[in-house]
Image 1 (spheres, rainbow, N blue to C red):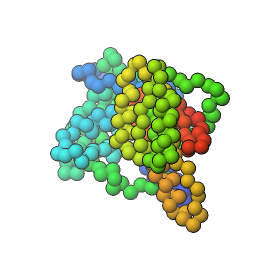
Image 2: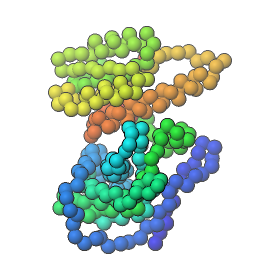
Image 3: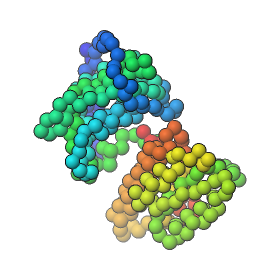
Image 4: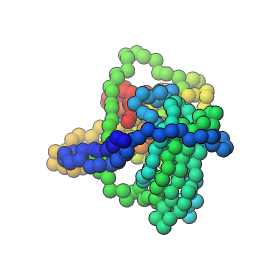
Length: 289
């Protein structure tokens, strides 16, 4: 039996342990699962990632499905998996699996459940047991930014001069000052055509941003192709560095929320992201991990 520990180092250099796992070889269970289960399909970009036995996106979807089976008394109650006793993988998991979830028991502090992943024939390819689910208030989780972000990649890719604007749907997100709002309106007017449409929202309005991306997901005539993020150009005030840092942190949270909304709504697509201020724009492709 082998043991694996997952640890992360903070900006201050201290290490924290997040998970411990014992790894052993076991036999696959006999028989097949009853019922069809819920199908989970990964995008082609990640379906056959060689580094994962179970891709994190697939695992997260299955855990969310299990949590959704818990009856809640109010919309403010959110259950999240906090630990898994056993994960067993019996065969290769490609880009598609069927998830069978079961709530085993309910305790005073939460629930315990089980997940079985099967292929299209019903054969078990993975099993998670002893899943602890507890109610969590996400706003009260005391995690620093360093603990929330483990890895990020930003690859700058300037748009070619004179390149045509791609057909489809563009989402324009802008800060709320008058100059940036005016530029957003101008870009919207220029982009609009019989083969393109533009949906705009205020960057700081998370619900409006989520709604903007949701509108683009199912329109085959105008498939999503890109996002334009416009930030206000503000001079750096060295007499008030706290304000500059606070704005930078707010922008990181807002753009991250927009990226999550795009991933949730534009499954299987890698949209082009244009970021800039009223006097300059830079084209990039963003990949978050």
